[in-house]
Image (tube, rainbow, N blue to C red):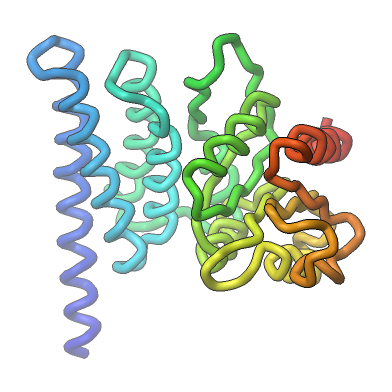
Length: 257
């Protein structure tokens, strides 16, 4: 009983703190647009508040809220300061979180993927207009450099990208987001990318999804043996990456376009 009371107290405190954080984000965004605060400073403050929401939400029973905040961090990736377009996108994420904390209830599992795909994705790296497709790719890699390179390649094709850094997070996001395709770095903390690929190919709900494994290992490396025949190996070296990544992108396009 005491434990339940404590958990309920923590949830109430989280809802109140999140409402305060959302109000702060809206206020500081407006201040930035009005020139009352430097856009760079406002941007860093907003990122801190989002990170706080993400880190606390799952621990008090709001995993979808944490996932929305996670996606908002991805949306802001690559941006240096605020502008009207970015603030508009932040507002759409904030509205979804506010809807949840107002009721204290998260959407049903069958509604989650649709909700997540309704959120805007960022394409700041592009110099030209890209048509965003309803094709979502889960990218799992602990390396920021590799993630940035692969993410850009996927986004240049119009694919939506969801990122994770480890295997356990990958399983959680796969359940909530229901991605159309997945890319796993071979070197992860908990499981290898090849092990993740085998696991997802063994599950009926993900068996038919395009999966790629990013690796610097040669094709005959023991860790890459025994993979299902439809798992693509994407070698990260300069010699092989363009062709291997191109083959994987074509694989996704063949499946969904």
